[in-house]
Image (cartoon, rainbow, N blue to C red; front, side, top):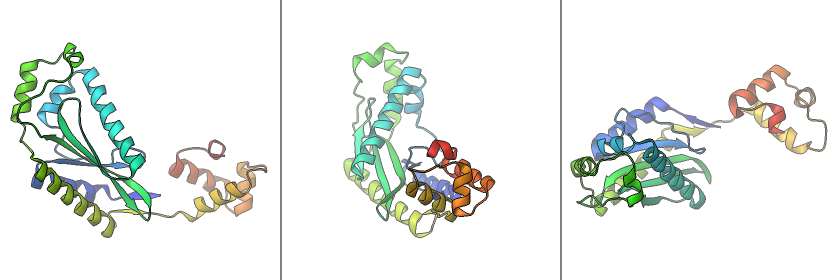
Length: 219
């Protein structure tokens, strides 16, 4: 079980944004957003995502980059379909992934390079795109490297200060161990609760609140 101190995480990432000018978000190991910063998207991304199809394109890109990072278990970076640099870095503790840092929306080219013509058929005005892109600050590659180093320091701070940590639930662990050892037997909630000497209601509550499923679904 992974415990996130969301308020302290949000405060830390907000400070990171004001120091670097770069949005930094924390995602769980199942790619669910944990942080909720007060800064939001840049105006360029807000304009792009006004178009529903372009918003899906952006979401697909983000998911692709996180999946790539999940497979390699090392930082991955790429340019989004609309020309901004994004980076995903894994948060690993004792060889277990606790989550992912996602930061970016960084302009690396001084002039807007139009996306593929297929994107232009949507309700995005070229002049408005260029205007919002021009207003973005330019990030040189050396600066992006420095920001990545700062993000690594933030990551270490999260772990050493127990802002993000593993939790252990003894009852749930007993139940999971019992199930794994008895897959060839009757594994009703009654038999499991009797096998580990825990009430059925307590067992049901643990699976529902911590694993978000019933015992039967888990089996």
